[in-house]
Image (tube, rainbow, N blue to C red; front, side, top):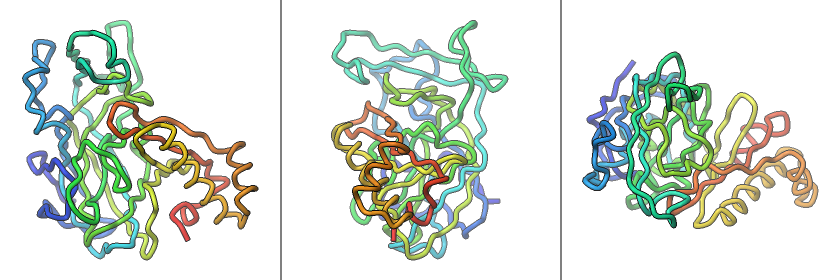
Length: 299
């Protein structure tokens, strides 16, 4: 098993980055991840105003996946996530859903034990570890790791955890995969702009779907397939997500648009990923009893 340490970090997805490691399909690789604050926030005494924002939301990598070429789809299998014993949550003025309100910056440390995140001594949440930032290099240029798009990026999908498989379109040789922004738990929306931010370790393996390129990232869980889209508004992102789901249902069942559109209203859930970045993230979730991976990834 190969290991990529958390000092191998990038702040953009780009074909210009030198690979931190090469792996073969099905080979296991362990990524050590810094937290989203780049370990600059330790406790409530930390001043958010003094953060070096150029060192925020880094991703470990990139990883060159052998035999992967433009036009393929990279399948990322999340096999294990190891959490530390504490995490950090912060609120920042002018950030988050309620950024129009006047409030002070604040930092809160939470303990993580017995598979629970202890917000207060008597207020606990079940730990649900997930990867916030995960993606591949775009066809050209650089995209900051804090930005989301067709390449993946800072999608903040709460189901991006152990047992899930993420399918990403490949734009460059080797895909140049990277991941970071690990969370111990996060709700849909990530409304205050941070979740339970943690460093940690993630065990992954990759497969390649040759000759198929998903139009958007597709997340497979035990129960469903979800199309992960983004746009400048939730309305626009919802249109893109539903469109991707309807087109996949048309392929799967050989339905016309009208029939697939009607069925989507019965079976496809539209959910919010995050609402705190410049681009908003949405997912259209289709139960796997109605859709196969092959149809989800395109013709």
